[in-house]
Length: 417
Image (cartoon, rainbow, N blue to C red; front, side, top):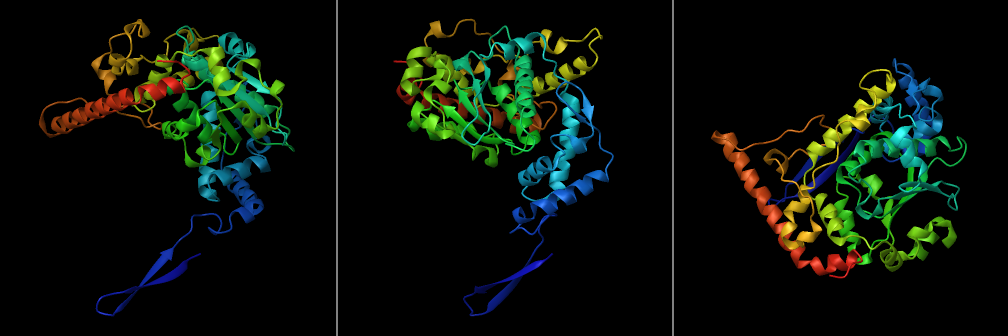
């Protein structure tokens, strides 16, 4: 369908120029009423998918079933893919096909070993009661910087996170609530974990999130926290909000105070008194989101795929290597950048970084491997040298700004300077 509009432009010589614009809507529905035709869209999308030779749907346990009868392939599931792509059926089809391939590259995730321990202890991941609309509410606790200690690889944390959310989705009634809410406590999360999980969720769990509340966040820092979420897409960001105190948080979900675990009650001040978080550590973690981590993100994502391959063939010699082999913990080089304004006692055990890791400029989540630009001779070397100088200048600017705002950050992190 082509729609034509004319625009008249008055010019100094009193002539009128008529410009014809041909607007071709994306494949799917007319741009103004795609939501009204969702039922038709589901039928058309299913017809398109049935013409393809698609692989079966793989569950988190590694079982396989026809995609048509899967949670993603039923009418409600296909509708979510259409909504996520704003009525563009070809984009929804592409997203669905890639989702089936992704499930085969990531699952199975057996609930065993370290993954089972992380889930069963209910420290980082916990299901709360359903909200007033009957949707599950999940608690993800980042433990104020202790979410990923040295003895727990981030690979295991990503696998446990995926298993946790898959189990929660599996508990949904096919005829009931199809979305979940989350309380995100004790931020910030590790940077690499955050990048990988956001990518996985945006691409493979469309319209599953009803609401996510980051708690507790002082109102004066709401805009700053939103800037840190630059890598989250606009639709997901619109479902993320922040609360400072406990009472507004309870009202969001229709909870009573005793519906929350004791350790997260009390709002901004109560939580600070109970947890006494390390302000300097959290400050370094927060600033890490402003710096490139392409290498660590790509490495962590690759380790997830390797873990799935190992889980498919548990008798192979490399089985379990994704969790027990190379650790994916990223070097805390961010702390080195801001070490000059932190007491030495707050930076134990910092390691000297290889120069190649310092300016890892690839932050594209879709790239399978990072690309490092190194200074050299000639035109390319000159350009890369300029980029290095610009990067250092930006880091110096961030450092000076941090020093000027240090008092406010200490107050924000519950610790007196």
